[in-house]
Image (cartoon, rainbow, N blue to C red; front, side, top):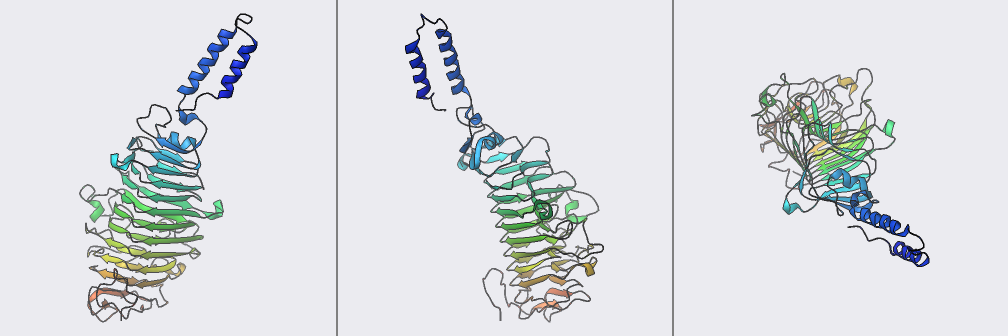
Length: 447
């Protein structure tokens, strides 16, 4: 409720009454009436139209009296850097966040806060500001192309959020995406996705081609995409049933710029990429490949502590980690049964639990500078680790568990998951190998 009229206003009116009386000025009763109407209007006007405030409460059942009824109303009146606190309910609206703020679900024991735009708007939650934005605790259900999207040098933190694609359309769809070109924006974008659940809804029972046949189109829903000049952290998330990569780290379209990403402790399953790219894909966009000049993009992409499975046994998941560009660490991941016997080659990669380098115009792709250590690479058909022809430097692939105490088959002497070296590549340094499962032990050596 708004504060009562200011005392000085009331006092001013009384002072005027002491000077002029109703008898000497018959208009005084009319002035009184106008004043009372003004006061009544002040009380009746909803508080979300009042000046901005450091915090705003949003209630879907609001009737005014200090509470916004929609999330967009709350965003409109909160101070930059303030908090928009949203009570449980279903909010049938698409949202645009154009200032620094924290958008947080509250009163969770009473139920979820669900953002469910009607129809199929292109973006359910759009970030248009470069100021820091935090989204916490919401559930986003959408039928368009983008769940949460930021374009340019945004600074977005997404925590404890659930995002579900509902009847996603054909074509490329994204649960969470940020794209930034620093040659245009002059600054780097930031994206953090933490402790969230992302569901692309590509169910093999509903979309049987998602498990068997890439020649028949189905929605290509990606989990998290970061493209261009971005500093990204994706950690402790559960990502399921995507029609594209669960996590896609994308080179800028001009094949330049810088990407830095930390992909940590995520649980990935049923990533059914239509292009058979991989559960975690680190590469240029599928339609952007070098034709005359090599990839010049720089960056560091660490993939550490993740569990990657293919419980639906999709033939379209050709790789768990498809690492074509950049450098960094692939460590302490458990890659379990991702590659099935039916998995097939692509222009960029061949089936493998981990694929390093590029077979497509490989002379235009620099070799990746990456360490592959302390991983459990088990139950993968065809290859556990495969290095591409452009991988001429010797990489460190020691201390991995190959599903057998005798080490890897293929380039190695044992009978575990294969280590395969494509013609022209150098054999990785694969010994010593772990004698038992190592990914979750925290061990720093294996000999």
